[in-house]
Image (tube, rainbow, N blue to C red; front, side):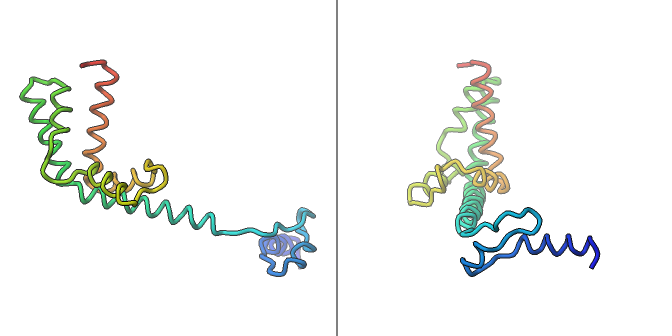
Length: 155
């Protein structure tokens, strides 16, 4: 066996999972001379993956379900902006008017209220899910309008 084959086999051996705890405590990594770790569990990692996927799906459902309401909201904001001659406050006020249909934010609040809140409620995966759905862009436009207002200090 050449050196390359030995290195490959040693690499594979260092990744083995040893079922018997007594055998695991006695096992030593041939590359490092250190004992193999014991008691490694994938459950916490799998739980985090499931939570992330769930948050993304929740965000996508919110974005798709709230799309119609978001479009109406955006249209009202643009209408108020044009009517007022370019006043940012009028645009934001138009965005906040009731639409008659649920918006992405309305669905988020409703789902959180019935116990489908993921983590603290501000999961990046949930936001990505919203942005992958068409309604998420309208929500982003609302946030951008509020940010511009805050930066410019307009009242």
